[in-house]
Structures are given as structure tokens and as C-alpha cells.
Image (cartoon, rainbow, N blue to C red; front, top):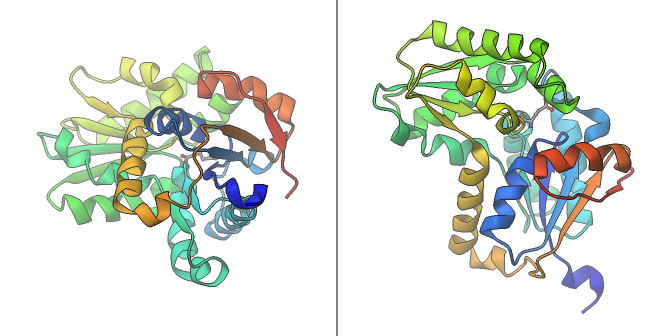
Length: 277
Ligand code: DGL
């Protein structure tokens, strides 16, 4: 078997660093698999971009991951999952790679959110793009039609986190503003989805501004369990993934800059290579 055929990593994609919080948990759950992470840092953030742009960028990155040997790609980005996943699954995949699969992060989260709420009122914090897409409302309705969902767009958070400015007074101001904005819509919210893969880095700060007793759901562990479950239910897909326990990192921007910040998100050393789009 040639190197190209024997190396079939699972692709993990994000606009930048956020997907690393998901990759970290996936690697714990599936340590034997090979993973290839791609951060489109040169064009991040995606959160404020149009449908067309997010779709175009995401499809381009997914196609690169396919060309690098991935049969299965996880969009570890809510914005890309909200704005590009369905079109890629329904329109592009049948043409460019009918045997390959692309999964997102919104569905696995919405499948379980109802189990964490007694009041029947849940919140979603996300990028402007994720919130305006209405994807969480649509998906939660499918699994828990009785739940009332309240959303809050947090446009300043990804830039603050990406620039490592999330512990200063300016960041605290915006975190409090967004948390207050969500709770002002409904004071009985008792479960909140961190609907952006960057937000686990500020989970403790978000908690600080919430009333006690509210469950805050980070996506990493949910996606990791969901992916393991998916591979068990789809052995034909699992057999197309190689298992040498390797993790490789690619960025569309400067590797040196990526590696420094990526370590914070991944919780371990990262050495990336640049991918020219
Ligand atoms: N991590 C991405 C998400 O989950 C951030 C999007 C962005 O680049 O703004 O939505």
C-alpha cells in the first residue's frame, strides 16, 4: 500500500484555533486514530462573514482535507456547521466525494441539551453568524420541541480569545454584557450551550457572571463521544480511517504564530505546517 493510501486521518476543521478544544477531547476518546487538524487562521474569524463566504471557505478547506487523505471530516466550528454543512452534505459531497462524510458540531449538542434542563428554558451563546442562522433553534426543535431556546450573539469574544486578550478588563466587560443579555431574555434559563468552539477557554469567566446552578455545556466532550458512537455505528467508515495514533496540524497562516496560541487551546505542544490554499 502506498503512503497516501495507508494514511487516512480524520480531518478536524475550524476557522482558527477553536476546533483544537474539540480535537483535544476527540483524541482522548479515540487515541488510536490518526487526526489532521486544519485551522483557516488566515481568513478567521468566520463569525461575522456571509453565508456565501463561510460556505466557500469551508468547502475549499474540506476539499483540501479530502485531498490530504481524509475520508471523514468534522467541522469543529459552529459557524461553519451552521452556514456550510448542509449544502456541502447535500450538494457537494455527492459530486466531489460520494463515499466521504462531513459531520458538524451542532446536531450532537442539540440531541442532548434537553436532558440538562428542568425549567424547559435553555440558552445558546454563539457567534453572530451561528445565532442569525437559527440552526440551534431548528435542530433543538427536532429533538426537544417543548424547549424554549434563547440566543445571544457574542461578536467580540472570538477576536478577544484569538488575540489572547480574554483575561483583561475589556474582555470581562464583554463577557458580562453577553451573559447579562442572555439572562435578561429569560431568568429561568438553566442550561446554556457554549455554541462556539472557542468559548471553553473562557468557561470559568462566563460562569462567574451566571447565577448558581446553571449547567454550562462545552462541546468538546459531547462531540468526542458522538464521533466515537458514529464510528461504532458506521464500521465501513471506521475501516477507512487509519490508526497510528498520530495528530498533525496545519494552518493557512504563519505556523510559528499558530503554534504559540494553539498550545493554549490544545493543552499541549503543537507544531504545525502551513497549507497554501
Ligand atoms: N470556533 C468557531 C465557532 O465555533 C468560531 C467562528 C469564528 O471564526 O468566528 O463558531
